[in-house]
Length: 542
Image 1 (cartoon, one colour):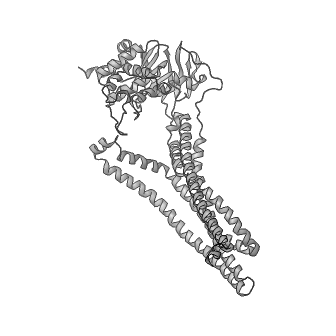
Image 2: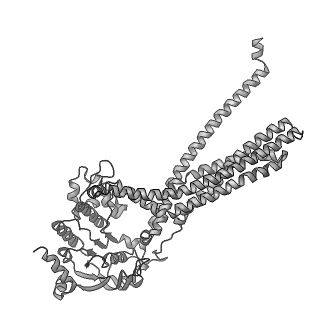
Image 3: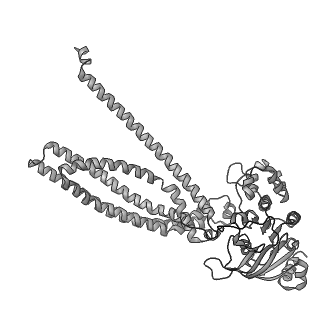
C-alpha cells in the first residue's frame, strides 16, 4: 500500500537522514563562506594596521636612518611584508583544521597498526626538510637582491611617471631605462630560477620516496590481509585512512615549511620595528622659552655624516640673536644646509655644543623645539593635496583654520597663485590624481614658503626656497619676509645677493668652516670671498 509505505517509520527515518544531510551541506557551505569572509577581513585589517604602525615607527626614526642605504633596504623589505604576508593567517587556520583531522585518523591507525605511522613519517620528513631548506635559500636570495629590487622600483617609476616623462622623452632615455630594467630583472630571475630548479629536482626525489613508502605500506596491508591477519574491512579502513593521513600530513608539513619561510620574511618587518632613534627628548625636558630671549649659540660645533670621515662642518662659532635675520652664503657643499639641520636638531653635533638661551639644545623637548622652528628646505615636498592642505602641512593641527591658511598664503604671495586656480584653495595640485592642476616651479615655491608662515614659529629657516623665482618675485617675497619676521629669528640661505643683503648679518662659509661674519657693507669693504662672489654676480648684470 503506497499510503502505508509513505507513512512507514523507515521512510520517515530516510527523510530525517536527508534533512540532516541537507542541513550539514548548508552548514558546511555557510561555514566555508564565514571562514573566507573572516580571512578576507583579517587580511585587510593586518595590512591596514601594519601599514599604520610602519608609518608611525618610520616617523619616529632619525633623519640619519633615512639617509642610510642599508636602512632603506630594511625599510623596503618591511614594506613588502605588509601586503605579502597576510596569507599566513589563512595557512595557520587551515593547519589548525588539518591537525584536528590528523589526530582522529592517527588514533585509528595507532590502534590497528602503529608501524604505519612510523613508515609514513619516514617517507614524509625528507620532503619537509627539503622544503624548509629551499625556503631558507629563497629568502637568502631575496634578501641579497634587495638593493637591486629597490633599483627596479626606481627604474619603473622613472620610466612611467608624469614627473619624469618630459625629460625621458627629451633625452630619449626610454631605451636606456628599459634595457637597465631588463638586465636587472633577468639577473634576479636567474638567481631565483636556480633555486626553483634545485627545489623541483630534490622535490621530485622526495615525492618519489614518499610514494614508495605509501605503496610499501599498502603492500604490507594487502599481504597481511591475504594471510588472514586483517579482514577485508580492516584492509578498506587502513588503506583509506593511510591515504587520507598521508595527504593531510603532506599538507601539514608543507604548510609548516611555508610558515617557517614566511616567518623569515616577517622577521624583516619586526627587525625594522626594533630600530630605535638616537635623537630623543630628555626624560625631564626644560620648558621651551616663550619667547626666545637670547638666541642660539654655536660653540666650536663640528659634524660628520655617518659613514664619512670628512667633516661636513667644523669649528662653527657664532650667535643667532633673538629677532635677528641671519643669511648664510657659500658655494655648494660649503655646509650651509648641514648647519640648518643641526640648528633644527635633525642631527646632533659630534663636537662642541649648541645652546638656546644659555642651555644645551638637547635639554629641550624635541617636539617643542620643532614646533617653534619652521624650516623650508630646497628639496621641499610637492604634496598632491588641495592647495589649502599644501599650506596647512606647515601646522597640520590648524588644518581647519582657513583664515590662518589664507594669511600664510598672503604673506608668501601664494594667494596670487591660488587665486588663478579653478577651485581656489580647494583645488588639488599636481597631475597625479584626476582634476589636479600642476604649477610652475616658482608657484610651487610660493606654496612651500607659505608653510613656514603657517607654522608661525619663533625661528624661520628658508634654505634656498626661491631658486625658481624670478628676481622681482624673489625680492618681493623676501621683502615681506623681512617685514613679517619682526621680533622673530630667521635664517636665510640664498645665492642671490639682492636677497642676502637684506639680512642683519651674513655668515660666509667655505669648506664647512666660517670664513667671515658681518653685514653686507662690512663684508664688501673687507674684500675676501664674499666680495669676490658679489662682484662675480654683479658683473653678470652689467
